[in-house]
Amino acid sequence: MAGGHDQFKITSVWSERSGGYERVQVAVCGCGRTETVHDSGARAKPPEAMAAKFRLKGWRIAPRRSGDQCPACAAGKPRKAPKVGGPLTPQQKRAAFCRIAGVKPAAPKPVTPQEPKEARMPPNAPPAASIPIPASPRPPAPGAEPPRTPGRDDWRRIREALDGAYLSDRDCYAKNGSDRLLAERLNVPRAWVSEERERAYGPDRCEADGEDLRQVEALLTTAAELEKVGLDLATRAEALGRDVVKLQSRLSLRGVL
Image 1 (cartoon, rainbow, N blue to C red):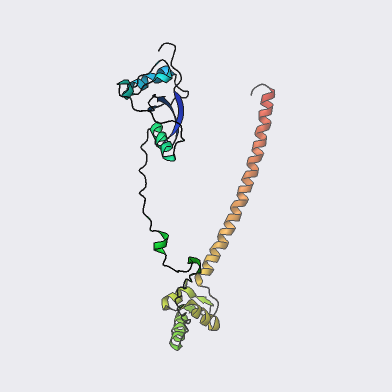
Image 2 (cartoon, rainbow, N blue to C red; image 1 turned 180 degrees about the vertical axis):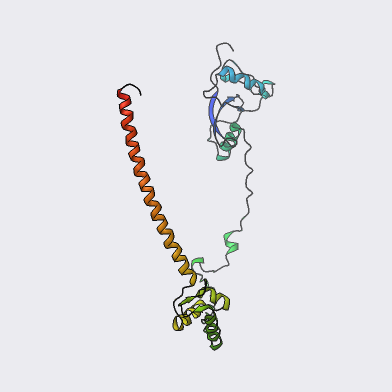
């Protein structure tokens, strides 16, 4: 192109594929048609490089940007130029943007005909704000069931179970027994078992508690002994570290290290 082509129009459009704005260069025909070519380089490509891309799309690129022609005009089929003078409507602006961006415009929403207000409201009807809205009746709250109370047979079953599971001479349950386990076995509230056990037997503990406590004490004693041994070893290791530093200093003075 003699003299060089003017820089094509450069703008940016939103890309659904990349999720961001991308730079494009736009060729404009005198009839109003436009063609967009994406320019994803770090810098805008020179007009000579972009002209080749527009020619691949059928455009005739002139030495000056004002002489560029779309495929239709280049083939001798120009269209009538739009009237100039009045501002573009929102629909025209959106259509122009879609042409430049190369996207298909969304279909217009169908308009639902609305019934005139006079037809919806009966004559002599009071304003909507003055029409009282009846309150919906609240369902009655269900009555709470009274708490279950033990009967004579329940107390008898609990005492018989405690006689077989509780060691009165040692004031504890046998093995790993407890109020919770006994209540689950009898299918009664735990509070009933606890009340009878506290009244006539002893505390809620078992033989396994004593064994576990003795094991805990033994483990604590062993841990304390190991901690003492560990402290002694750490002290000895620290002393050895100091001796090593002294020896290294002597060797350095003699040029060995």
